[in-house]
Image (tube, rainbow, N blue to C red; front, side):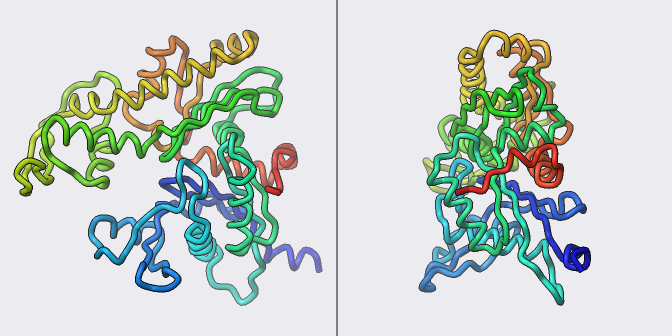
Amino acid sequence: MGKFFDSFNSNIAIDLGSSNTRICYNDKGVVLKEPSIVAVDKKMSPPQVLEAGHAAKSMIGKAKDDILTTSPLRYGVIAELDLAVALLKNFMDAVLGHRIIKFAPKVVMSIPGNATGVERKAAYDALKMAGSRKTWLVDKPIAAAVGAGININKPTGAMLVDIGGGSTDIAIISCGDIVINNNIRIAGDDFNKAIQNYIRSNLHIYIGERTAESLKIKYGSVFKVEESEDIEIRGLNVLEKMPNKITLNRSNIREALQPPVRYIAREIKHTLELAPPELVCDIVDAGIVLTGGSALLDGMPEFLQAELKIPVRLAPDPLLSVVIGADKIQNDPEYQRLLRDGK
């Protein structure tokens, strides 16, 4: 009888980020990858969530003023509980689908390693309100390290840098725990803003966030690369208040991105300065591992390696390292001691 009911159980692992959410379900691997965006009708009382994920993101900059498109997270933690609950419920329902018999799922969700007690409680409460039966939290650097294939249980130092959308986790891990965790509020969203500000200040053209993100993904680089053909973009001329188009190239995008990526490099150096010499020696030998979607920015490993004088490499799947690691921690007895009940 127990095996019969177990067949209806659902195990869900969630990487809830400021920019994107990824979910693993049972033994099916990653089954959902959606933007962490909700579209809210502000005219309703209380405000009603109209869309979530890709559907909501497509409305950014195009919906009327009554429709708010936003992420309920700031810097990797929940800032608006009600919207976070709606987002999680939407995604969890999409994963579970329509069943005749549906049990509430067991859920593990990642959270920044230095999240406060209040922030952890908000994450725990959001999952319970969204419909989880049993809830655990796991520190994001630990999940990312496990997902990247690092043996965190060894008594040797490993350094992982997870560059997400809202924040960057810089962690030194040894003996199955975080020795030093430096969470900074500079990441992919700031790369977008840096491109917007550069084009506005130097070329007097205002572009939207989605356009800036598209430029970052398609043409962004932080290390010297061969210049490509000219890039033509359209925006609002801030001097004439009229639509206009301009031409730029990859060197302009690289110049725009220098301030935020150099800040990340300085914070990695600072974190290394705080570490015991024995762990630093291990890291110099093994190198630094990069995870997170923003780590895929062209030239990021080469840039950081040149700045730090330490080998730097990308994880096998930087985008999915956190959720794959959270899923493994939930299901592998070797790692389940790392789960926290969130209270």
